[in-house]
Amino acid sequence: MNLFKRFALITRKITPIFQNKRTFRLLYHLQNKTHDDNILNEDSEYLTFSENYLNVKQGKNCYIIQPYIKWGPQKLQGITPEEQLGEAKALIDTLSSWGVEETISIPLESVDKKTLFKSGSLEKLRHNIRRHGNVNAVFINLGTLKKAQIINLEKEFGVPILDRYKVVMHILKQHASTKHAKLQVALAELYYLQRTVFNEMNVGKVEREKLKMMFQNREQKLKNAIKDLRAERALLRSKRQKIEYPIVAVVGYTNAGKTSLIKALTGEERLKPRNQLFATLDVTMHEGLLPSGLKVLYVDTVGFISDIPTDLIECFVATLEDAILADVILHVEDISSSCFEFKRKHVLRTLQDLSKKSGSDDILNKVISVGNKCDLVAKDLDFGILKISSKTDIGVDVLRMNLEQTILAGTNRRKLKIRVPAGSDAIRWLYKNATVVAEVADTKDTQFVLAEVIITHAKLEKFKHDFAP
Ligand SMILES: Nc1nc2c(ncn2[C@@H]2O[C@H](COP(=O)(O)OP(=O)(O)OP(=O)(O)O)[C@@H](O)[C@H]2O)c(=O)[nH]1
Ligand SMILES: [Mg+2]
Image (cartoon, rainbow, N blue to C red; front, side):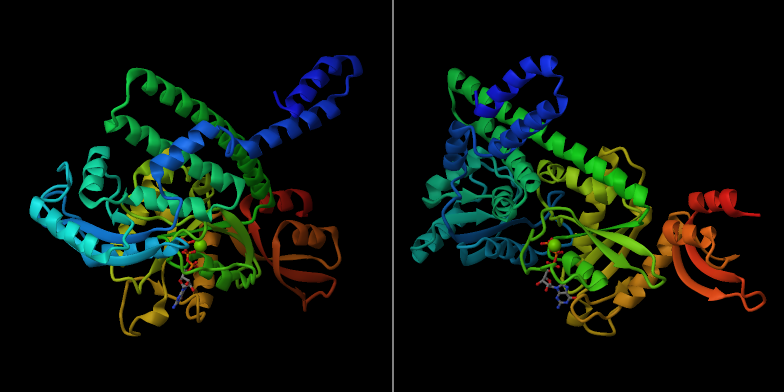
């Protein structure tokens, strides 16, 4: 039992005597906090197991294989093997001290074969990998490989085999900096182990039970810690709703330019866009002004990526809840990407799935799409959406205007002129409870002013009740 727990127990015993609830609460909180901070690093047995099993700690020099189905229902639409290889390479380049030795795409008939590839392809790959000499991992760019496939291919190539889930998970682990993100990534890792370890690994009954217990223990701890953080988030959200700022969630495929756009919209210098996949892992809020002076909160979110089992994304549901509940969802698309249609579909489908899971209404009707990075495409190309560049500010003002119109229409806010006595309680109330865009003296009677305001329906009713003659 750790020191805080013991102290808290003793305090709990003596609390009724002293009725010192505040001290007890403080100690209890302190104990829980220390416990939360330790969760990720305790369970040394689990940590050793996962480190050995995942085998991704050291930097890797990768040989990347893109398997693709040429025909049939398993064929992926909207993205070419070359584009997929580009994304796979970007994933590896995102990891510090990892590199790419060579990339290759190989046609398959199905993804279910025990060795994945036919013997001819295996021979060719084995030869290529050996020729390089310094390749110490093979990254097969498919969601999750079966454990049997991994074991067979490791035998064939003599180096560890990585799938997309493993690589993305490792990136998330490297980029997670806050407690919340770290806990979510730890849970994603645990799910991966639970699914793959038992699937095809030959473990005896006793060992299996032991592993199960170890996983269940850790899952419970992580889930409890995440639940607490979710409750904190809900509290923050309700506080924000009380402030009544409209909320604009900025979502999109990873690296589309979400953080850059928020930086352009708010002028917030401390935001650091990076040419990395999954640079942003935490939801952060940023205050901005719309053309009329109406304040909004922009929410930066984790990027989406295709071909990842949903449990990895589900780990971020807590963070994406803010996005789902926002007044407007701003979908940033990278129009310079050759497979932007594919990415668009993926983002919209994921948003829909998430909103269904969290029981909210269909959220697609509050989505505004913008085509970012227009500085990188020919001027005359039409994408059917507003073209902007977060880097050069092209179109950012127009976007602010569009956002304002959508927010006014969608959040029951109205822009109107109200005539009130100058210097009165009424005008002071308006400054406090609405956005006063302009205030000019009434030329017919200078005792009065005309205030141009943006006000919510509820506040307008209150104003009428309190101040209308
Ligand atoms: N040329 C050009 N580059 C851009 C533009 N917007 C963003 N970028 C670049 O694209 C890269 C990714 O930008 P971010 O803003 O970090 O993208 P993100 O969507 O927040 O990425 P994640 O947080 O990783 O999902 C950075 O290198 C940016 O400088 C743009 O309008 N034009
Ligand atoms: Mg970002």
